[in-house]
Each structure stands twice: as C-alpha cells, then as structure tokens.
Length: 381
Image (cartoon, rainbow, N blue to C red; front, side, top):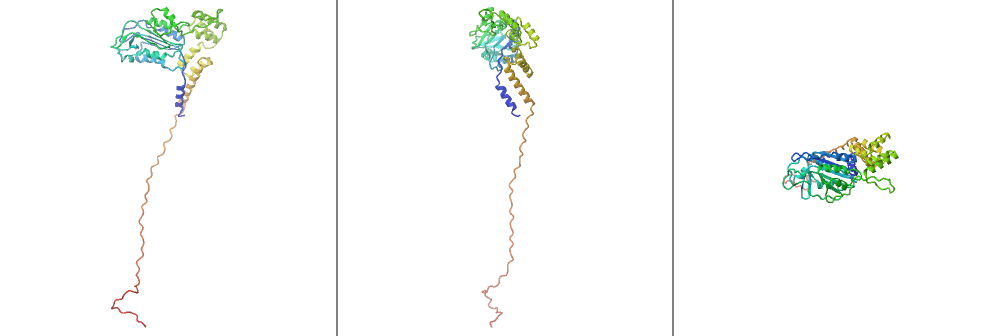
C-alpha cells in the first residue's frame, strides 16, 4: 500500500479536466487611494452567466491577493476549453504594450510595482485564447485618474488581443449590460455594439462571434434556422410540450435556462418526477460540490449525459483518494541488526620448556693418558 499515494497522484495528474464555460466578474468601485468608479455593479452579467450554466467567479472591491485568486480560476485545467467571458470594471493603468487592471488597495503604483498591485491584461488574454467558440473580455472604466508614479499612464492602453479573444471597452454600466446581452441566444458582438455606440471593439476582435447559438427549428417550408431568439424560444417550447418527455423539457432548459417557458418546463419535470436541472446545470452543481454523492446524483439523472464520462472519472478519483485515506500507514521495515565487529584473536604462543636429561658421566677414554706417577692396578700374567 505504500505506493498508493504515488499511483493516485499520477492518475489524477494524467486525467484530463472537463471542458466548461467560465466567467470571471470583478467590480472594483471603491479604491483606497483613487477616486471611486461609478456604476460598476455587474449583477445582471453575473445572473446571465449563471443562468447560462457558466462556472462563475465574482468579486467586488478586491484587494491584490483576492483579485489574483479570482483571475487564477482561469488556470484550472480544461482539456477542451469552452467559452470564456471576463468582465472587469474599475481602474486601469498602462505602459508600452501592456495594461493592468488595478486592485482596490493599489497605492501610487510605478512601472515595477504595477504587476504586483494589479493583473496584466495580456496575461488574462493568454489564459483564454484557446476558448471555444471564443473569449470576450469586457473592460469598463471612466475618465478619472488614479494616482501613479512616473512611467505609467492612466486608463486602458492599446491592446493587441491574440486570435480567439475579443476585447470590448466602455463605461462600467455599458460593459455590464453588454456581458449579459452576449449570453442571449443568437446575439453576436456586432449586435451588442450596435445597441450601444459608447462601446468599442479592439482591433482584431471578432464582431461576428456568437457565444450562444440560436436554436434551429423545422418551422416553415424551408426548414430555416430562426435567428430571432424569442421565436426560437417559442418554437422549441412548442416542440417540447408536444413530445412531453423529460428529455424534451431538458433540451429546452439547456437552450433557454431563463426562457419564456422555463418555469413551465421545470414544473412539468417536477411532475414527471425527474430533476428540473439541465444536464449542464446539474453537472456544474456536481463539479462545484466535488463530492462522490454529487457525481453519483448526476449519473443517476444523466447516465448518458454530456458529462457522464467526466463524472465517472472524477468519481473514480475520489474513491481512490478515500481508499488511500483508509489504508493503514505502511509499516516501516525493521532496522538491520548491527553485529559488532569482532577483533581478530591473536593467540600468544607460550614458550615450550625443553626438558633436558641430566648429564651422564662419560667413561674414561681408553686412550686417556695416566699420570706418570700413577701405577697400574692390574699386572700382566
């Protein structure tokens, strides 16, 4: 079991994240060291994003750390990025080819401290350039200036958005209204610009971009797609009511979560005993909750849903984490016993005592000479 955490980390790192539409809305109206910005309220835009099933991060009068945390939601992995809408109302500074959206606590920033007291717009644009069908960044401000050091200029500077990113500038009230309008079915950036002449599209933007496509219907002899959102809403509801199935009402709510007949569709689903939430809405709720129960609930309602594979993958990951937490901690292997080294024994050799025999009297040699004065004791016969 000691390898489970490593195996789990590798599995999660390799698992692609689910594509989802995301929105970030920051309304900085009150600044500690700059004039207040009027009409920064972005409630209509927030409600429109949530109604369209967007994962939405919102903030008001955010200081530096909180502002960076809100923008950092765009860093979350997404294997097939959906649409992105970013609305920033407040004070801006620029220098050269970059501009910064300033935090509510920014104080006399200079060219060096501006990145730490705000967020660079080029950084945000790089984070959303892969969005499909595209990304829209709306920037709202007024003509008043915040105090700043040399090297910076008040306001939004010239921007060169990357392909796939459209930037709209205007007053805070206008940008908030435009963000909400862009989430209506069949509405293009060109439609939003035509409705308010104070709005401007940065060079390179896609005026024909539509974030929520109009619903195709079979009405009429030519079976043409109806671009009028109201007519498309009514036609799809008529079709849903005629079919009178859970899937038909869900399809309607998926296309028009705040449509003319959304209340009736939800009521009919409740009477049919099924979830009143669309596939995307129920998935967004499960992803935000991020619990095994939430993913099981989604799969129970939409076993073949658009996000069923992602729900099953995340459910598996959570179960692996739960199993790893329940596993007993690995038992450490006993330390090897250190056997003390034995010093080599040196055997001392004891000297051997050689027993010598006592000396014996040697017989006199026959040739030994006798003293001249000694007479022989024997005589010859």
